[in-house]
Amino acid sequence: MHELIESRWSARGYDPGASISVHDLETIVDAGRWAPTWGRLQPVRFVVGKRGDDTFDTLVGTLTRGNAGWAPRSAALILVCTSDRPDDPKEHTYAAVDLGLAVAQMSLQAVAVGFNAHPMAGFDAAAAVRAFDIPSDQRPLVLLAIGVPADPATLPDEIRERDEQPRSRLPLSEVAFAGQWGTPAFGERD
Image (cartoon, rainbow, N blue to C red):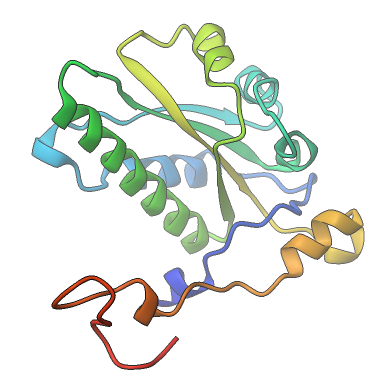
């Protein structure tokens, strides 16, 4: 597996003093722009906030649940939107796939330039639509935090404990099948 994929993880304990250059932030967003897209539709759009600017502060204001406790420490927040055309079920479905591909590429680019990316669903999409005057044919699906992991000793216990949990995934034998559902496609390995 490529080193960028293997080292990618979603931290919560960001260093609130770390910043990101406009250049690095632009390369991360540009990686999303270059993601594969169904039928050359290119439905993905981005609202980009860098800590200290009004866009960032507005995005922080949309955070819900536990994300409001850690995500404001990130260096940047990127709201990722895609087309919302329920009248075209194929576009509606594949626009969401395109968004997922964009977020994945942005996450890997973040690692490549020395940052960490954490995709979140815990934000108020309706509030984001109102705040940024997002057109009705667009839907915000992911809020991506970009930051630098902090020294664990500086983090609140609950964030440090979550960040220190081992990263794991189900074994391939439980998720990749051949012949019929449930028959492992590959030999025994994790």
